[in-house]
Image (cartoon, rainbow, N blue to C red):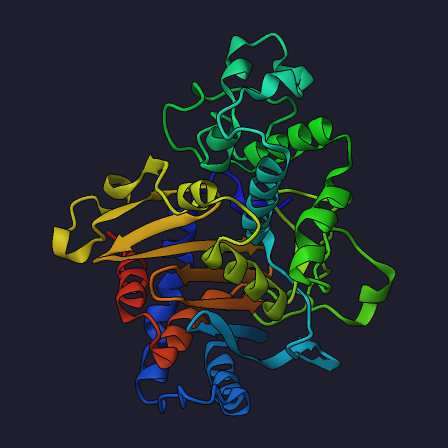
Length: 373
């Protein structure tokens, strides 16, 4: 699991990781706008290579969704000292595993006619909390929206830090708990459930949760802040919350499915796009309302920002030597996936989003977060 993510909530990771991007904003300001009609991936790759050089990011792969379809995928930089990155390169996307787990959960709930609000203790209970009455309060809705009451990761034994459903608390443990409960009720292993429920239906053929024999020259290795390669990190067993390897192309299929509400009922799709736990005050603090979204919080697997009449669903992933970001807007039918293999990876986010100019209001909000309180 990602040690870097211990005790971090989503927004702190976003703001801290993107702060470095403010120092390189001038890179995008002087770049030509892309040809929005043909999605020229080759031209974008040239621009991307320049940003990577200036920000000292090893490589990046970017998928762009426009008008509800995949417009193009581009890559630049080095996946390893010996290999160039390509759209086929797999990246460790860390916590971007969580929206995938959320997709699996919602599809299972729909297919099996299970409820978001059904107590999970009748399915499975972690032995560490079997005698704690608060275990009976856990539901899929509470776990997917980070209201489990668990810490991000357990310290030896799993225990509640607060009562479930009472407030937000970012937790990888919550997602692992839900995955185990769903697998127990379905009578199948989590990795097999993920493959059958999400990866195969969405055609995500280059997405893996554990190390596979064919991966040896297919993935991007991590780089530290000084540009030195590091040993890659793989989960020993499939994780619901971390260490997912995927391509920008594959992950774009996930956001397209979420954008369109494929594979689930309209009510579940609407619930995914609704804020389940409010975070506006935590995010905005003393900022003037004009500098903030009109609403912000966590939904079912995604952070949600409402800006004007548009919603933006986003998640990030960060572990040592990797940074990833994905977002989409159901109203605007736009989205972007950015995968990097560098501690510095967040530095290319704002230049990329400014250049694409798909969702300026959302990009400005990320810039606001990066600027600090």
